[in-house]
Length: 396
Image (cartoon, rainbow, N blue to C red; front, side, top):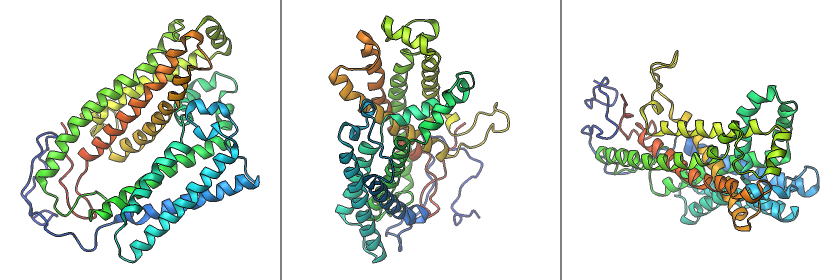
């Protein structure tokens, strides 16, 4: 007798990811009561409320001059920091409005939950709108720079005087604090909006499965997710290789994207190695994305010492891929006005190479987001909250 009440499953049988074995199981005919929430459903709205209240307090500190605001660098507009294109008061007012409105929306949703009422349609729409507003106004391409420079600082920083100190200063700047807050707000409100949408559909707030779930539908979803994921990863990899195509040639002294003056300045500042390192990081990222549709992205290859053969936790792939996709989308979005205006600080008449590399990050980020979602759906196992679902598919 197995733990799931005697439903016949061979614990040693491996499941093909495309032709998923569909066990016989009675189909639920009515929604569970009460609807399963899990910690995800219980805490997401509270986290969104706390973030919104903290953001309103942060904006108040800026307005009173107690804290330094992050809107002074006008050059950050090229990286997608759209609030820096206006006077600091505009950025402070927008941030305060996001915090106040967000706190009100979260508080109202929490009151409806305590009263036993389902979320309203307007509440769900506002939650998704807040997610989009926070992503557009508070997150910009500097996030990708911070992530991309981290391995460079950890390696070349030992041989480049001042690089590590400059990176530490950047991490503690008001701009980085605001940026990190924006990422946390995007994730918090995205999670809250997802939970509210599932609750309104009378679905499990942890896994999203409805009461009319069937094993056959789950198998079809997994096959569809694998097909979509393969296409998305292909688009993401092609887009990811545009940036290193403009940086790796620097290793051999080929000044791709640089006129003579810009190349001489790059050499004088010793930044050629940094550009090559960032291009190499993009290549590594392209290789890692293949794991979203390949077997080694679900189970560590057996030839690796200590970890070989172990299951890759879903969150270990989904969490970093989600953050990177947010960063890529922000860079690509920021490159659009640069491309339209035809201005770029370096490169001269070859600046279009850099602009193309930045614009390619928009489809890269979109495709990575789709591939990440498909990966999570395909590896979704039985839900501990509602009990629905199939065992996670095994890959040989």
